Image 1: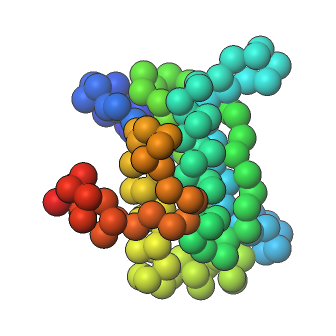
Image 2: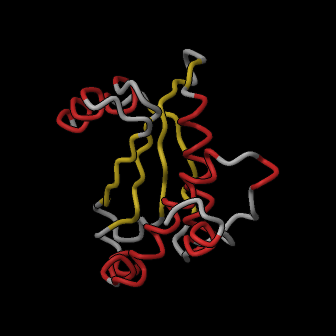
Length: 148
């Protein structure tokens, strides 16, 4: 993670997304969780990081059948020391057969990737241009001339 942090800061990234798979000793642990910088005890958090974590979590959950393990504030170094708003997305548990099977499918990974791309777009869209969660597609953005 320290290499990601250094790269993000050296390149003046506008947004940092760190994708992870989790593993737990109990094979019943499953689902997607997204983390942003923050500390409830100290009353501080990244406003943009929290907003983006919420958007990306909602998009992934609306488009997949991964369980919603919600968003969480953490003070991990990657989230705390990166200059840009940063989120960590734990996309499921390789120790859970259901999550592992989903994540092994290219079509499922494509849906997750589209969820993240759309979440980025929604982060920067004006509210009047936004669409209902889980309905906007990359093809829609291309038709609108937002990305070719």
